Length: 125
Image 1: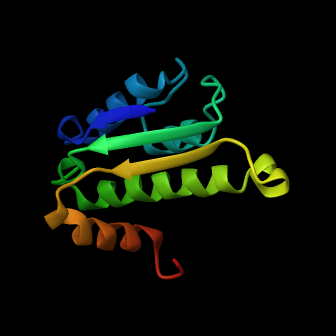
Image 2: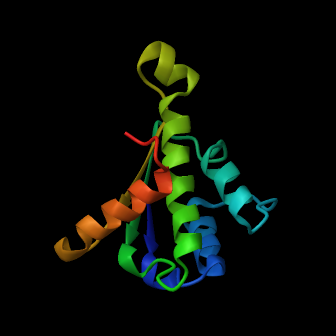
């Protein structure tokens, strides 16, 4: 389990730093969005059956940059889907799973849901 502070994620550098520090990203982490996506879909350096990322103060994450916020939400959803369709998950009903929890006040739940739906695109379930 990794706890990240959304208040420290006001810009992309803060996002990358929080994820890198919490999940012990390898030295080759490229400090950009594709590198974040790649690392979250791999995590082989952290041997675990399940991965849980809790982002506290989620409404403060990239609050001033909606486009990058959408990219981050898309990456988190993609990582969850990748882990859910891994070989072990698909054929054995088990395996490492990845979950991201966005912690917020009750007043912010619906707006975060809407933002995540936007990040998923028109074909989202």
